[in-house]
Length: 459
Image (cartoon, rainbow, N blue to C red; front, top):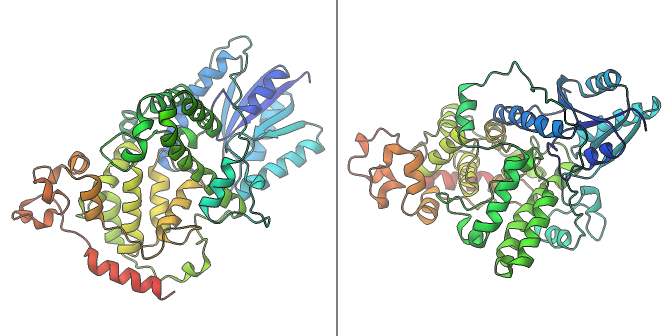
């Protein structure tokens, strides 16, 4: 090849372990393009994700410039914009890393066919999951529907080792991405909580494995503790690959055997990401259609005021409100509390889980096309290997168990900060509850639990 190889970047915003980029640089000159696709079949990013994307692309442009690779960023229909870039740069080859949603695969297949017709070389690579979905099947050749056998099979796979950072060419001056972008107040708030980009992702992983992983199994459910890896947004945007995480963790387990059990637990949680991508690969409607068909007949309540109270962290149930406010402030929510907030909405309030999934999609910086709906369907009971319908979390007892001193609640719900520990999770029991600048609970937890059980049993 003598022309410029175009690297089409998607959810792989990194230099190391980027097979498409490494292959392009081996052939000579390379240029990168990121297309924020507006194809009608694709789900548009939420507001928090758009904020992260802008800053991630700027970090990546700086890193690519060190390799002599310019990065173009455009918005529009994927095929149209890609062929504009090919024409503009005289590219004779286009490389990309594979993605797994059905609509995405169909778009990529159509583009690959056109490239072939026009005599332009193309190649795609595995980069963004541990094992590609079409390589994972049960003994009967069917997709996995239960996580434990999936995880057991995944552990037996030979997970490809991550590629090193490619050698660079002549450094160029990076072009500022989206120079007319204006940071909204919400974005500036999110920026106080995050370091974005590949280097930040690697630092997070190293710190987690060095300092935190040993206590991960016991501490990961405690919301006041920063006991998890914090890698979810970096994985969602591909600033670090799951293969990098896997092999770094395995290397640490060999180096420090005392951490091996904790690392296995951590990697089993990473495995859920692949499990969710397997579901996305086999059906593209997991954000809108129950994976277990009978749940499509559930009669949801139309309760706009309750839904808005849930969104705004004004339910009157402190640990729920703490989680919703944490998400609005930081773009993430502790995983245990995500389960509690989702359970309250879909079961106690009997509000369609899809409304909650959409709110999370718009508000989380780690919103992910497979994990976001997969996790919501798990809590709602309609997903594969889901939590059973009769498992309805009690947010009061959960708060007392995992936040016994109320530290997490007091941080995000200052209205109840002055209450004693025994009342901080149920402030309505305080003698001066009426004097608190805090709402009464919008739902009776016991009554609503029975209502939910009746609704689910009727299916």
